[in-house]
Image (cartoon, rainbow, N blue to C red; front, side, top):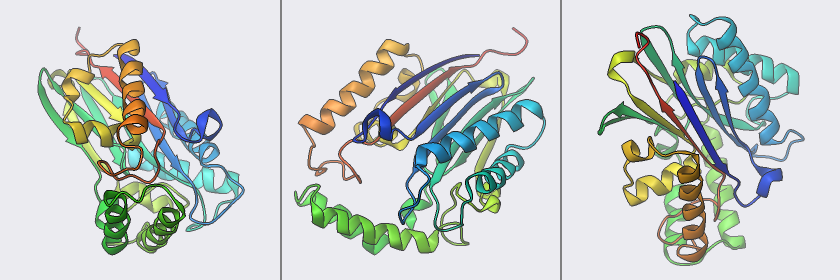
Length: 273
C-alpha cells in the first residue's frame, strides 16, 4: 500500500490549520477539525490531533477491532483529556481506510469523503447528513453569496445563524453525526468493506478540496494516480481559483474564501502480491 499526502492551509494559515492526516501501518486516518459553536479554550487543531492520535493507536494495537468501537473510545478519551462538554466543544470529521489481509475497511463520519475504485471505475462513501439539516438558514447563506454580497459582516451573521441551527441537529436522531464529545456518534458513521483484490485505489479528502473537485467534475480516478508534486499543484490551483475567480463565493458558496485542503491518495496492492 502506497500513500501520498498533500495539504494546504486555508485562511488561518499554518497556525489555524485544523486538518490532520495520519499514515499508519494499517492505512490512513484523516480528520477535519472545526471550531466549537461558542468560543472555548480548545483549538480545533488540538481536538483533531488528540482524537486522531488516539484512534490511530487503538486501531494499530487492536487490528481486528471495529472502527466504530475505536472511534467511540477515542472520542471518550479525548473528551476526558481535554475536559470537553457535548454541544460546546470543537468537533471533527473522521475518514479512515484500514487494510487487512483480504479486505479494506472504509469509515466516514462527517463530510470528509472517500472515493475509491479499480481502474476508471469509481465509487464513493459520502456522508451528506449535515447538508440536509438547517435548510432555511443554509439557503439564506447560499443565496446571499450567490447574489454577490461576499464575505462581510452580514455573511458572518448568516453563518452564525446557520451554525446555531446546525447545533440543534448535532448528534441527534434525524440530524447529523460528528466526532465531538458524544461517543455514540461513532456508531452512526458510514462503513464499507471491500475485497482487497477488487480495490486498486482510494482518495480521502477534506471538504476544502472535495467541494471544488466535485464542483468542477474532476476525475477522482485520475487524482488517485497523482504524485505529491501533482497533488500540491492541484491544491494550489484550487486556492488560486478561490482567490482570482470566485473570491466572493458566488460560483461555489462556502463558509470562508479559503478552507484548509487535504488530499490523501492510496494505491492498494493485493495482499497476495
